[in-house]
Length: 246
Length: 263
Image (cartoon, rainbow over all chains, first blue to last red; front, side, top):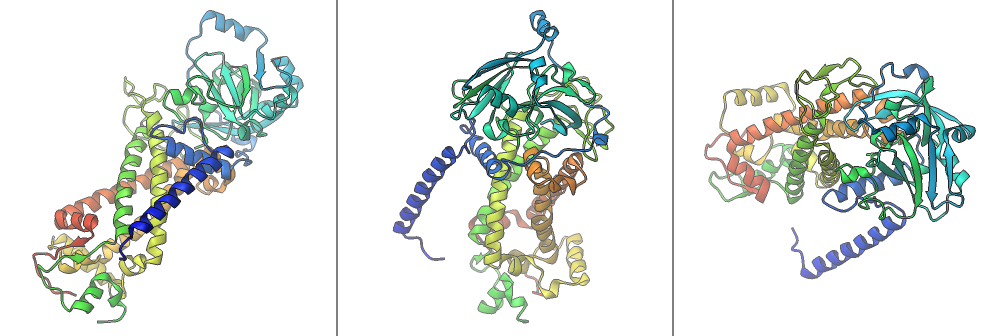
């Protein structure tokens, strides 16, 4: 083995440092850094998110023939709701779009149903390991974003459940994706409450927990810092990854 | 000595220095790249194992095909309590949820082990590590050679000088299986579980028979890797823990106490 000279060592160290800083700058510029990139798991989160954004920005989640729809779909239990919240389920559901939109708007479920419909048979994959296939029917999120005039400086869509501690966000790659669906029906009927009805945002290229149930508000933002602890969603605050495409 | 066998590390040493003296000076054993990648792999594999078990506890049921959940019939179920109340386990209690950090550790360790594995494979190719040290030399490529090694293992024969400096056919074959079959399989079955990766390359899942099949296979291949780990560590302990650890940490080894004719 040839001895390593001090000059070589310093030169290599400097080169590595400079290219590291340059790589970090480029990654930030091209949106490859997730909001939960800090902390001990930041390296893994960043590598995963960056790799997926380079490889899979436009890929489509697998769709299945209707005969593969699960006879026994499974839904996690919903925590009991206070009476005031229950009432909202009786009225016409209202979805508010605010933040970086040219025309912020509130849409009722009936309004949503006048927009183009998309039906897709996709799999729900829970981080615990189980899964089922269902047909999901609703309005592609991108239609609503166009209708409300998403401003060019927006980089994230933050969405909130009627359950106050449940909120999440996606980047533009997922927000503008044709399969990201404001879902109001499932299989042959309305979307049942345990599965997220009246309105659930289905993000089929990510794990089930990104598909937040009972959506009431979508905010367009250029940064995730002002929301919660600034980690992008309630999930990282509970120890889970923001990006759940794995 | 045949020219082919001269390529193995020990034979090379012998051809240069003549028959190796017992209790001689330390002899070179493992190159730095092998040692560094070995120990990073050890740490990452331990992280993957612990976090994998933790993730498994949240749903200790396995299925075959595309889908499966608590309402469908499992292929088999591991008889342990679960960390989720929705899983029918037969136990009256639920374990604490550890999936958050377990998942982050699992994927971070996966990145570490995959990148380390890439470095090892590229270095191994260019330094002739695979050809010289792992592919069995011609004289080991026979049923008799296999039987000989197995017989000496069953008789618990003390390791020879040759064993300290080179691998026998059983070691070579199991290392090759782990490096070129089990690790690629565990990476493949793991990637198949990523909904985003599967959207870009659907065949990763479809070729395995569906998502739940991929999960079940991931579990079994991990089990085989764990089995390898147990046997590997047991053999290291039996054959001389200090000498083997020294070889994998410092890169050099001492010769064995018991002289044996070199085959």
